[in-house]
Length: 373
Image 1 (cartoon, rainbow, N blue to C red):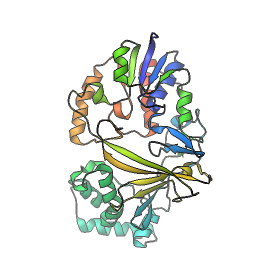
Image 2 (cartoon, rainbow, N blue to C red; image 1 turned 180 degrees about the horizontal axis):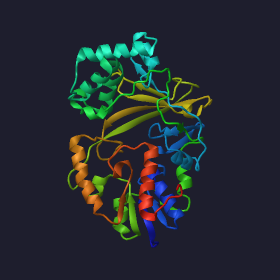
Image 3 (cartoon, rainbow, N blue to C red; image 1 turned 45 degrees about the vertical axis):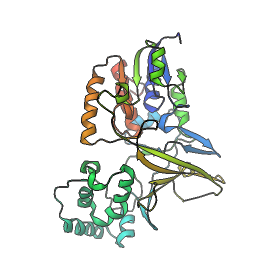
């Protein structure tokens, strides 16, 4: 390539797309590359059978920040989907988050007072005052029944470790809601874009040059100096050649299938909280947009340890990995021509609204303001 750019943006996900959109609004030129064969990162959706399939897992946009909500609504019209997952423990079904419907299903209680007394009875009996691990932390917060049926085995599948071997800070608190409200998020703004997420990224990247199926490390060997600055949303440890060793991640494997029936499970998200099955949850994609198609598409999600060649999803922010990331962060802070962003560049799990806010922060550092200001 013989064209020169102001910014090379590595990763066509939400962070990279927001930065590109804002940079172009400030008159800058951008080249966006992605190792996958499409733009959109993990929020990429693909239309199959008239259903917008969340290829890399369910993404439900929610925020308490009206500025962020107004911003994302520039690029798509959102419906009024409310996340109300169901948990299945063997043949028992419970509402999430833990609320009065959950407590009634567990114990038959009907009032908040009865539910609080039941939880207190169980936590007092255990007498855990200084939790040493995730299991003790959860037990001290909700007692044995909720822990056994809705937390223990699901968490062990998700992290691939016994709850006794996981640090307590992973569960700093557990939301207990003493109302009959199944809305998972407290945020006043939430929904799913009508027509899927990919259109949002397409609109944000309009005007940028885009290369997919392009690995940064191969590309930069042949195109060093192609841009004044780089926005890097890949793995921070990989950027520095794993100098201090690799950071640890959890990954997710998806099994997606089309079923010749209209409605498989009656809800977009059903968590499977026992070891009875290997997967953590089933997503039925049509319910995100209230679909009435004659067929349906489901995805089973299997949590697994990350290894080279598969996509890293969740950072393991335990003490060991946090200390290792701090060493890479020191290196990153010395790079005056590289901006590290996104969940992999910051080794942190971000909700989508926080991704946008983080991109805004980087934009303001570069240009003093964003189009949202």
